[in-house]
Image 1 (cartoon, rainbow, N blue to C red):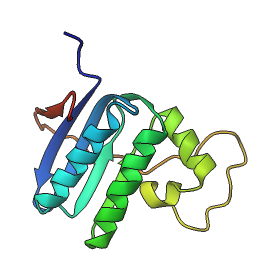
Image 2: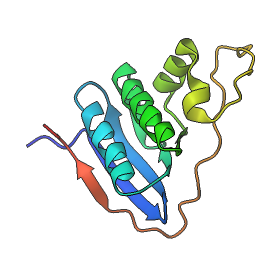
Image 3: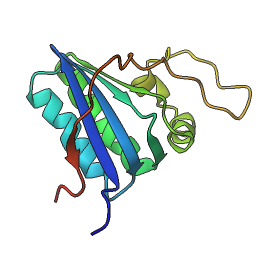
Image 4: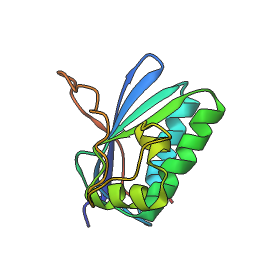
Length: 140
């Protein structure tokens, strides 16, 4: 039995949640991202911080899942922010010009001078929270 490609950890505090994703986000695991973020909204969460520190890879399917979740979150008056995206996702955000939607960057940010993406805001502190996987594997 293969190991899950992506694991989702969730820590709620009132109407705010810290989602930590671990693994790889691609066409196979992006539906898990969508389901996880939609579940937060259904549960009354209005501010979602997504820590991507343990994500090794994220392609445009992951970006699509994040943009979809951001749109749903904005429609209900909430916020969704990505923290510490992997280099692949940071590059895609830079090329697509949509980092301001997910990273909380100002709209008038000039293009980077170097070939390195802008640094996002730091993730909320983890503190002494014990992480328990809430979703993992296939959601089909």
